[in-house]
Length: 133
Image (cartoon, rainbow, N blue to C red):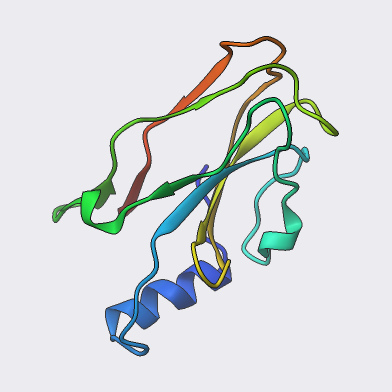
């Protein structure tokens, strides 16, 4: 289940009313602590993957496709994390999060079936989509 924490709700409402007049791209990352996302989470709640060729992925705002309907959705092309070997620290990935590129505010998080990259060529693929109804 995708969770939009309180900080993400504030961001969405602020954009809706153009409170700040600025936008930020989203950066998607993978987390290695075995937790269930909650509305009270902050970015500090998540332990980002490290080592094994891992790097977070920045998504360009103009490349999102936003479609109205029931539900309305914002979709992005499939993204791939390519690993060169095992991670350092926590070796298993439990899910992903998205944060704002400049401020670092947590926007959303979701768990998936845990995956432990071990060899060069291991991959995680994700097609980002956010729906609202």
